[in-house]
Image 1 (cartoon, one colour):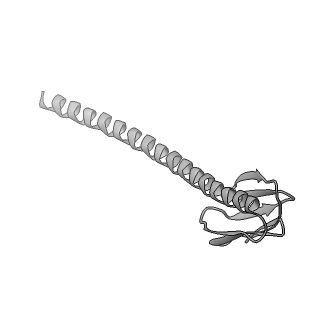
Image 2 (tube, one colour):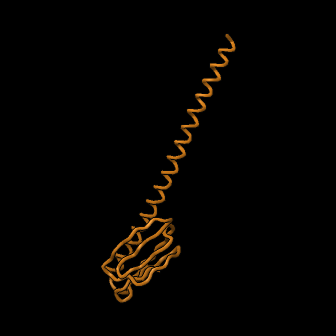
Image 3 (tube, helix red, strand yellow):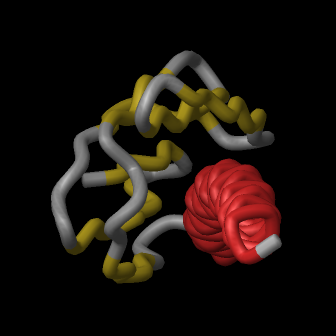
Length: 121
């Protein structure tokens, strides 16, 4: 009788440990997904900040400028009136009414309107 109680106890303990390990692996996957979403939304938010600065400088006219601190943008590509923001394999593209002539990335960028042409550096 005592051996049967011990075996039942060990069996219940093993079932409990399996349930705990499954739960922990599910929580780990949820955490990874949440971190990926947080990173994407931070990148999107920073892109919106730069986008807003470019639009404001464009509408304020020649000679206007705006400084921003950024962390989540690895690369900028400029077209005629478009900027493509890149970070960790993700891209967001924005179009503008002003011509965009120069783009470069650093921790602090300055958006300038020089004679109706926007530079981001």
